[in-house]
Image 1 (cartoon, rainbow, N blue to C red):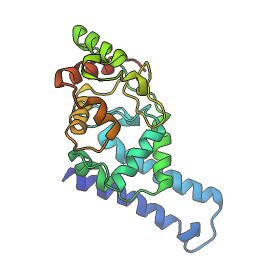
Image 2 (image 1 turned 30 degrees about the vertical axis):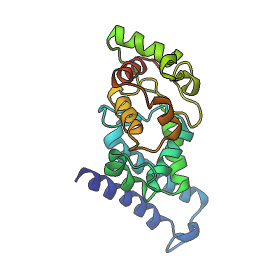
Image 3 (image 1 turned 135 degrees about the vertical axis):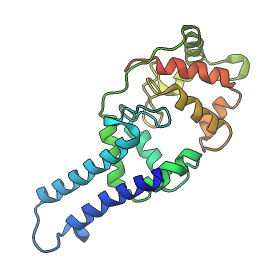
Image 4 (image 1 turned 45 degrees about the vertical axis):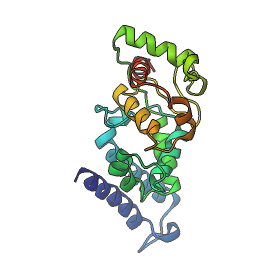
Length: 219
């Protein structure tokens, strides 16, 4: 029911924009200026961001580990994931339940605008966890686990886990969300060939340690 409600809100925002701007940017019933079109597009984007905020929190700072923080995430990664939701190539259970319907009506311009907006927001604050677990996670993140053939996570995600291009920011992300995503990738429920190869032999205890460390990192 919740996902259906969110889909209806999204479609409503897009319909509002379509009603304001006709095909090719021509308004029904009169002339419009470029400023009028820009205002209508801005209004539609604002409605979309409010809809996203129902789950992802104000300005992309989520209060529930079911939904990831979007604030401060890299724009290329957000664009990539929204397109994967739209074409249904990201097919983990939560993607199907929440994001397939949400992304189905998005066009390229809207995807880019949403991604740019959230990338510019202040990242979430750090959340301290168990010190021993955090220290273990830090070691795995920075050095990998040579005996298991696991490379350092920092190689792709950066020394402070702030992400780079299509490699997402992990710093400050909900630990529970990170563990859940690691598991769905490891089990092949979410298509991520590079990550699957990296974490295929990672234990759940190791996942939890790394996730606890990442959640403890400041913006």
